Image 1 (cartoon, rainbow, N blue to C red):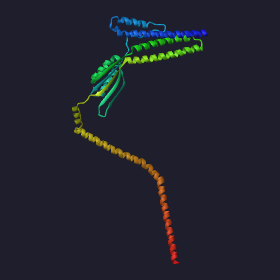
Image 2: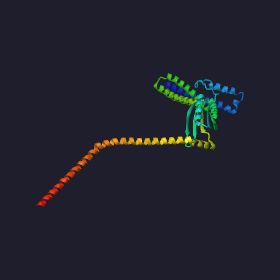
Image 3: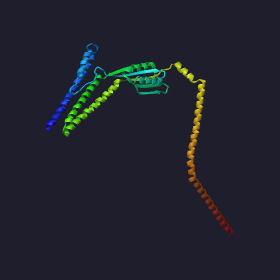
Image 4: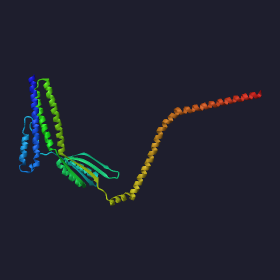
Length: 327
């Protein structure tokens, strides 16, 4: 039993050491590859030979890392562009940009349009298009109005991308080795130990895969942020627009609409008051009939009885006075 445990421990240690060795070699190869552009390797005739040699060495299968299929000659670059455009009709320009982005195989990440208190229109949109179609979308935006500013930025993630890919390949190879070890385990302790290592390795594989997928999307689709403003009007155009607003027909139409709105308001107010009174009067009338009327009748009867009693007392008093006088 002790011999088997010792054997399992030695195999796991050998696997981890081999993993670290492959990761270090992949990192060294990546550093050598990306140091080539700085020394002018891409500009010389011997550059393809050097890059090919690096790629073949990195792609050679090893006992742990397995087969590496990444094309290290393809640089991974994320493009982001921002531009501000003035157009006569920002809303129409926004719709045209959306249609163009969809035609180029892109999609809308977010957009909105608004009008401020002065009546000026604004629009903003974030578009995602295939990286090779970014220039076409920018040209479409240029055709919609006057470009006030344009900024293009790029982020080269090649080194991080291929380093992450090498880690993923190493983790997958380590997973296969752990599965082979698991098949040879005989005791519960050995199985639990190997499965714990498998859980950790598979967690790393999921993390590496998610990051690579995210980078693939960011590299494949460039981002274009466009701000659309309305073209400023000149003073003459503003005066002409003001004069056009006060034409006789427009004034009459505005007056008639104002009168209609006022009449509609009065009718609605009267109707609302009538409804309120009806809603309040019906319950109030019922309560008055059930409570108020009996109370009023009771008070009237009480007054009548009091008056009759007073009259009777007065009559008795008069009779007494008369009898006394007669005596």
